Amino acid sequence: MLNIKKTCLNVAVALILPVAAMAQQADQAPVAKPSPHMESHIGNLTGHSGAGAALYYRYCWGCHGARGNGDGENAPYLNILPRNFVAATFKCRSTPTGTLPLDSDLYNTIGRGFNFTNMPSWAALTAQNRADLVAFIKTFSARWVTEKPGDPIQIPAEPKLTVESIKHGGELFQKLECWKCHGQEGRGDGPSASTLTDSNDQPIRPYNFTSDNRSKCGRTNADLYRIFMTGLDGTPMPSFADVVKPEDAWDLVHYLRTLQVNNKSPELTLWESTPEGKAIVAAKRVRNTNTGSGITP
Amino acid sequence: MQIKQVVIAGMAMLAASAVAFAGPSPAGGTVSGKVTYEGTPAKMKPIDMSKEPSCAKMYTTPPLAETVVTGSGNSLENVIVYISAGAPDDSAPATAAVFTQKGCRYIPHLLAFQVNQEIKIQNEDQTSHNIHPLPKLNREWNKSQPPGTPPISEKYDKAEIFPVKCNVHPWMHGTFAVMKNSHFAVTGDGGSFTLANLPPGKYTVTAYHESYGEQSQDVTVSGSETKTVNFVFKAKPY
Image 1: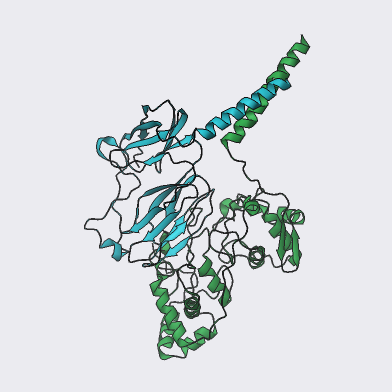
Image 2: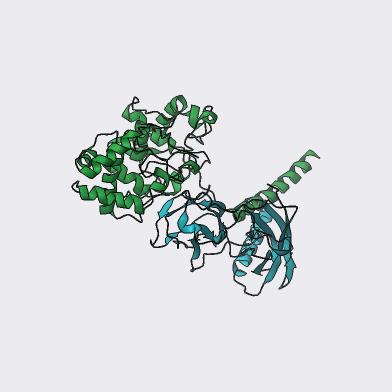
């Protein structure tokens, strides 16, 4: 009796299993899974996800969550929301919009932190620790298995700084309508500023150039160049790589520096040495709002 | 037991090859119908384009938001109706699907195209737009398109329906529908749709509206018959 039952069961299982397996194959193509073991390569450093896991579950998961999808214990209290590593959309890249960043981009971000958000600088960790964390972050998304990082945008050597290049950059600032969000004076108070939301539907402010020199993805001229050419994915800041020529891009960088009226730069010094520039900068300094409080709904 | 398994495997292979050979049969069945709503839809507000004079001047009366567009006889527009299950995946057509920004609006409001089909996004306005589609499965990108620049060419490699927006002009909202197969239609005035060239079989027909959500119905098509499937969405009053 028992044996017959067992046999019946076996037959039934044998009947069902292959059919079920076939059905699954027919319905959906195999979905790529994230790899549990990743490496990162930054210069001479090699990061290992195994070592990174221990660090992540000590320093990072409170905000970024146990599964890396940005839903950590602290996340509900934060704005901007913590990065979701499962989506693998990153702001600071040297690669084109829509592509994965380089390991070095993530490494630099961890060391730099994000101004105006709750992500601090982790420069206090050793370089090896940060490289390990980069490797571990890559275990959350299958994109790191199925895709390669994009080809970094090429940044040509910076041409000589001239008053003409600053003026031409100013024309581009108008033509590309950067002021729609960043404001005519670069205070982050343009006509669209109050309506902006990031890809999590959270309100987000455009960068206020008068607030010192604290852009989210780096402080050098090359960083500024990279920011508007790659765009900051997941935010309203688009990529201009297809519409700005490299030589024009440097002019725009020189002009953007003159908007940073509270950050002494060679560009600002040169601009203030001209009568026209001196008057403009002086006028901008009158409303010395560091936080972009000029934004009105 | 082993014999049975072999027989089943053999049958499955036969079935699979039958599906493969039945692929492009031009004269197939048709599923057609109409998409309507019941209840009272929210009244669409006129779009305030005063912050973008170059677009505002293109209209004598301000255009209405297109979240819900209704037509005669309670018909519902901008609904994508597609075969969500039962049909094999199709390869992408060679022609590009075109998405135009004109008068600070998206034409069409809902652009449907196939996996890996080229889409061309063009700007006919005198202002800069940024095109920011917000997929969850596909890659998210965000590109600026000042006036007079060439069309942006893109592709999506996973089936998904997701919103598209312009961050500069917050009223600009559209939808991209990336489809697995070629059997889909977007309703216009009148709310009717036709899904043609369906080989005999059992299909799931799904209708998606950006505000009212999605509905599905199963339908079996045999020969070259035309089956009628209608969808009725419950209107949201807000």
